[in-house]
Length: 267
Ligand SMILES: Nc1ncnc2c1ncn2[C@@H]1O[C@H](COP(=O)(O)OP(=O)(O)OP(=O)(O)O)[C@@H](O)[C@H]1O
Ligand SMILES: [Mg+2]
Image 1 (cartoon, rainbow, N blue to C red):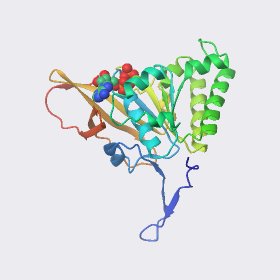
Image 2 (spheres, rainbow, N blue to C red; image 1 turned 90 degrees about the vertical axis):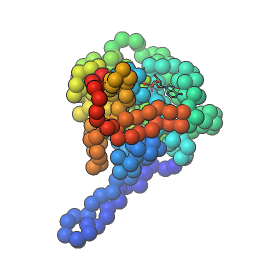
Image 3 (cartoon, helix red, strand yellow; image 1 turned 135 degrees about the horizontal axis):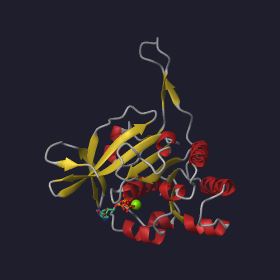
């Protein structure tokens, strides 16, 4: 397994007058189109929301990010809340880019959070501040002990249903982001969203705390549905805000510019 990332490098400005620019180390998603609009990938150690309504491809994008990382020797952890990992792996095995070896050799690890809740004796209702602290410590210990470089939480929304007060969500996310950053772990948090435009999470505070937001949407066009990806924000990155059409294919997610035309509506 690789050690934590080196400190960001500084490059001297070309004219020698401006202060040197910092080059952030990137965590390549391994999805060609996405990496090219993100200057090579997500800044290493950043925490990014993958937001979208039902069936837009959130889980598939996150799984590919982990598989591509595991292939590069970066241990990857999928924390599952909404779907049992056994079922997830069954669905994943329909994609050619997935190799079961990655799971067998421990490069790609699946953990069911409900099982963790049970083991920790956490109830099924709203979590107390103490219980939130226990959950945070458990995630940190897992990441640290396994040397995890890439983490997915599917979904943050399900965790946030049990942390109802806004200031507690803020605190949970700030602490999670800080811990993961210190451990050099890049993370994707899945956010299930409704049709409210301009909102990317359950409470609306989550998108302000994370370092980036990748939005996946279904666009209805001439009796069909196009899946569309858009980077809403990505700290430390001069990225395009354009919409890209995505296709979930057996070999992975493919992206192409979204050519406007025809009748369409967001959803
Ligand atoms: N082997 C496959 N090849 C291509 N596309 C697939 C394959 N398996 C599933 N899909 C597509 O992926 C979709 C599911 O995507 P995914 O589960 O990633 O979406 P999601 O946004 O996580 O959904 P949810 O809101 O239910 O969590 C399916 O509806 C199907 O269209
Ligand atoms: Mg999903």
